Image 1 (tube, rainbow, N blue to C red):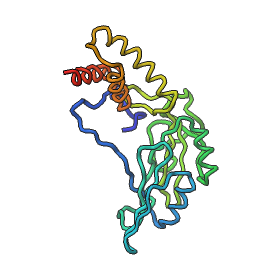
Image 2 (cartoon, rainbow, N blue to C red):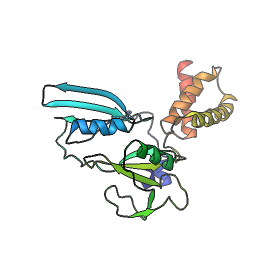
Image 3 (cartoon, rainbow, N blue to C red):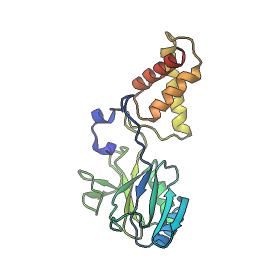
Image 4 (cartoon, rainbow, N blue to C red):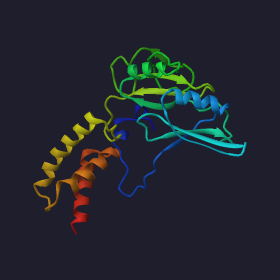
Length: 230
């Protein structure tokens, strides 16, 4: 669920240590003309990962948006979904104006920035109000564009994530995370068994990147140190 639709209470809930990781890595996009779609997404600057064909009835093309751990696949014989039926797939950006300009320069027809009056609507323009979120909140400023088949994309600006929603690891974010880890390690280290700082730091940072709270990540770090020091 999108954090914009979650309460703060729900947003800070993180998977328990026993929950199996389920990493969303591919979204299927139904298209009519594979080569046209390939030109469009390649023109956006997305990375071409694969273009495989078997005979004339099956072909798959994979692209990955810049900075994304999730890719898209389209092709021939891949899906029975109606071309253009995938609506409102989210693309998260830290600066919606800059992202919008960059996409326009790469050939996309991107809407003006808007926010929603009420609930989220991924199709059409229902509920859209021109301009950024009046309070400037993360998760609430949007823009949209579509591919040649009408599959639509929503740009969602997130400058600061809600607790428990993970991180976007760039240099400033990682710097803050390391400082946070340093502070938490100081608390933990006062009564911790002898260990190398990297053992605890690694577990803490991975836990935070997976969306756990600082308190949960501190516990994960302690459990990791205890495990390897047995």
